[in-house]
Image (cartoon, rainbow, N blue to C red):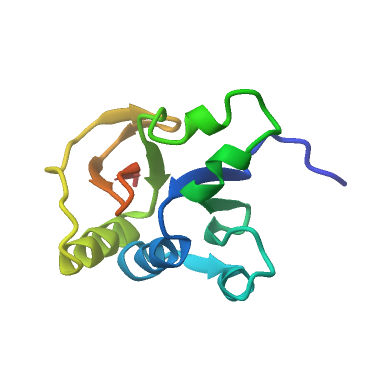
Length: 142
């Protein structure tokens, strides 16, 4: 039986250096690179990092913005028209992420409590930026 529930498949982030971005997401955020080797040898147009079995972040080279013709105005979207992307984690992964980010000297906001999201009020959350300025929120509900 096919599951027809809507899900988030991927988010495309504009990045200056996809290899460096993949390194940041692997080492500081703890996400597994996808197609990084293929990208590095010119066999894939961009690498990605895996959030879970169903969702990835595509790390699109900012240099390709001018060639984006599938949608009028796509090149103008390069930059930061999105406020932030939120990662929901179990509490122990939330704490591990914050520790890894601190180890990599990534600036973090203070921890907030009871912020509203897709599953109600999150117990704790904080924000950080990747090296390209994309803003992320991390939270946990448990």
